[in-house]
Length: 81
Image (cartoon, rainbow, N blue to C red; front, side, top):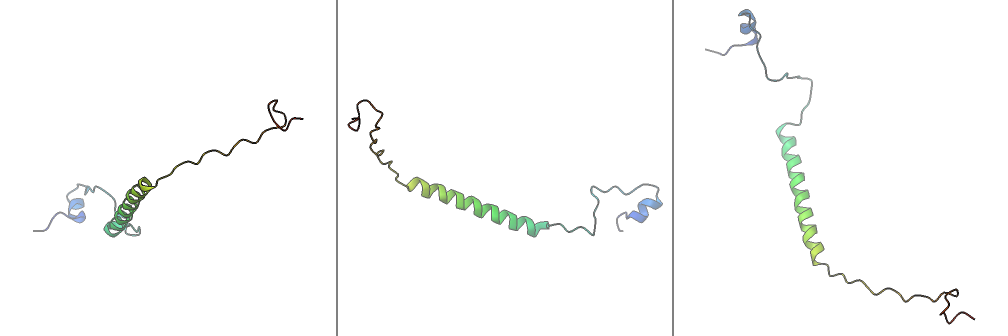
């Protein structure tokens, strides 16, 4: 015996309760869209993890600041005449 259909439920005087309305004219991504999105998110996570590892390998030493140029207005400057 089949389940209660919308016609049967209406004939019994009870509305058929649905959890969500399905619009046949609307296109949704479905399972394939979720799988593709998850694969892109996983790939991005792996790239960021690898980038962090590569950044830790960089040995950066800051060079000494360039020597200051004496100013003619400085009282101890050899340029002051």
